[in-house]
Length: 82
Image (tube, rainbow, N blue to C red; front, top):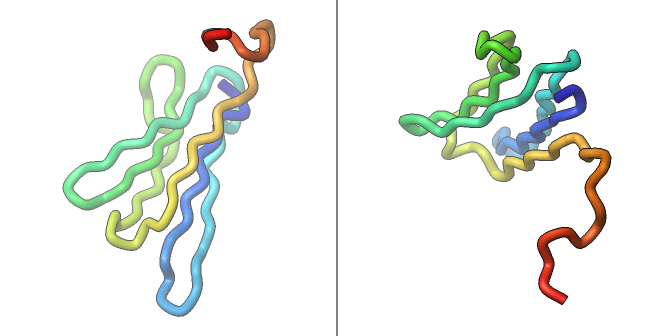
């Protein structure tokens, strides 16, 4: 969905750097995978084609924050026990 976003905070030695991968068009999504010590964040189309990919060494990744687009139509507190 347009607006899906992943924020990656990476240790760059004496400082930290922040990278954002965002779904750039409607119908695209952002997927995250951790394989063999590498964090891979990809923007993917509806049919599964990868548009772009960002790769980071997992030992250097400090934070990985997935921020989905706010969905409309849902009510606050759905699924909570009262």
